[in-house]
Amino acid sequence: MKRIGLLTSGGDAPGMNAAIRAVVRSGIYFGMEVYGIERGYAGLIEDAVFPMEMRSVSNIVQFGGTKLRTARCLEMMTKEGQKQAVETLEKHGIEGLVVIGGDGSFRGAKTLTDEFGVPTIGIPGTIDNDLAYTDYTLGFDTAVNTCLDIINKLRDTMTSHERVSVVEVMGRHCGDIALYSGIASGAEIIVVPEIAFNMDEIASRIHRSRANGKHSNIIIVAEGVMSADKFAKGLQAITEYDVRPTCIGHVQRGGSPSMSDRMLAAQFGNKAVRLLNDGIGNRAVGIRDNKIIDMDIIEAVSMKKQFDYELYETLQMISM
Ligand code: F6P
Image 1: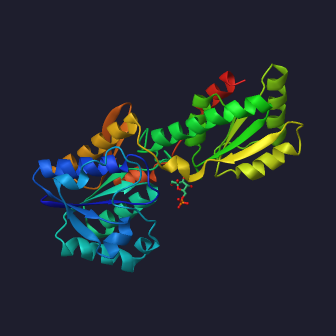
Image 2: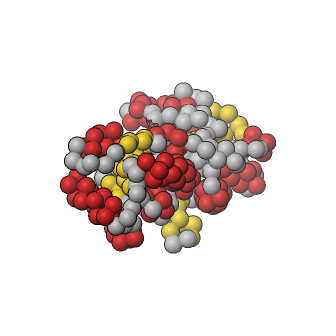
Image 3: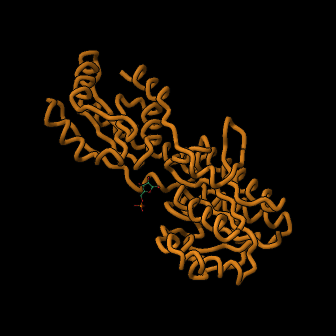
C-alpha cells in the first residue's frame, strides 16, 4: 500500500493527536504517503484532504483535542454520502483508511469495507470506553483523571459543609467513566445505565454512612441515567442533608493526555499502519490483557460491551 488516509471522527478524545502522530510517522517510516482528512467523514465527503509530512505532526503529542478536527456526520449514513466518500478516496489514490473514533465511526468504516471494499483500520478513540472488543479506548484514562481532579476538589468543600455531592459524568450507555472515577475517588455511590437504582436505598446508604461518622458523600451519576440536577432534586426531597449537583460536562473531554493514553496512541497508531503495510485491512486495533491486538472490524462493532459487576461490587464493599 503506497498511500493511506487518516481521519478522526465523533467525539474527540485526549490522545487522538498522539495517535495521528504515530500513524503519520509510522506511514512515512514504511515509505507510504499519508493524507490527512479534516472533520472526519464530513471532510471525506467534501474532499477536505491534504498530504501530511513528518513535521505536520511535530509538537502535538501533548495536546488534547484533534488537529484534524472532528464531526458527527449524518451524511455518512446515506448511500449518497458513502459514494461521495469513496469517490474522494479514489480521486486521491488513497488505498487504505485509518479511522480514529468510537462505535459510530467504526460503523462508517465497516460500511466502506463491507460495501465498497475499502481496507480500513479502526483505532478506538473515545472517552466512553464503550467498545467491547478492547479493554480500554483512547482518552478514557485521561477523562477519568480529569473527573478525579474535580471530584477531589468537591470532596474538600462537601466535607467542610457536610454536604452530599451529586456529580454527573459522561456515558450515555456505558457506566465505565462513573465506575472508574467512583472507585478511584472513593465515592460512596455510583449510578450507571447498566444497573437500576432506587432512590430510597441510596438515601438509606447515606444515613448509614453518616451514622458511621462520615461528614460528606459523593454520588457519581452517569449522564445516561439522568442529570445531576434532577438526581439531586430527587434525593433532596427525601433526605435532610444538603445535596448539591455538579455536571463535569465537556471539561472531561479536553486536556493533555495521560501517559497511558499516549502509550496507547503510539501503539494503536503504529499497529494500524503495520497492518496496512502488510496489506491487511478491515481490522480494529485494541488492547486486551495488556497486549495490543487486532480483530475483524465487523466483529468488533457487533460485540456487546459487558459491565464489570465485580468492580461495581468492589466499590460497594470498600466505599462506606
Ligand atoms: O461519545 C463521547 C461523548 O463524550 C459522550 O460521553 C457524550 O454523551 C457525548 O460524546 C457528547 O457529545 P457532544 O459533544 O456532541 O455533545
